[in-house]
Image 1 (tube, rainbow, N blue to C red):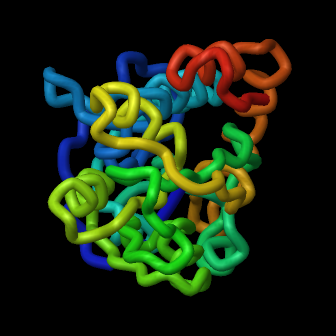
Image 2: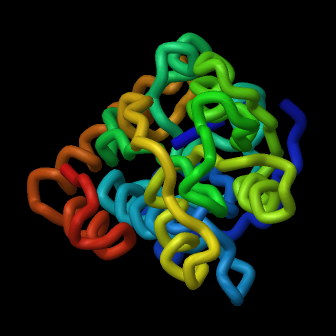
Length: 241
């Protein structure tokens, strides 16, 4: 899935384990379920919280969690406000010029258009997308008119209140919204394949940390625990390693 200037880093709390070694600050958005969100207890939750805790455990790292707005999540990693990005971020050549990535922990997730009617023309209409995402870039190059919003929730609201004809986002994010809308929202048009899978973002200088997380991701792939965790949060039909 995702995205990139000013910091509103907030909500830091220790992971449920403390294994020793260095403390790593795990940066996430906290607003993109099921990847990451803030639960009723005010804590980061979701697929990436559970994944990140397990990766830190396997890498023998003590980790804390920090939330940051999506549109400034890369600059605040580079400036040292946290040590990783684990926030549904798709690996792209453009991002890879600024930061480094681990190997992907999720395969590419298809993007989908969601609208209020099947009759929406997504090729020539007004399409909402979250700022700094692969979807916003895709719409801008597609010939449609893109309207960008700071959060994913705002893109959905834009469709609902008529500011946009449709929203383009990760299908795994939109699917629960469609399912729970009682027919108000529908998928329209064809799914779009963009992005190179989802990985953890790190500063280019943190090669040792990258190696530790790569080893932990590989071990989860090899023992099947990553596949199990992916299906827990995204459903049995989800693409997984």
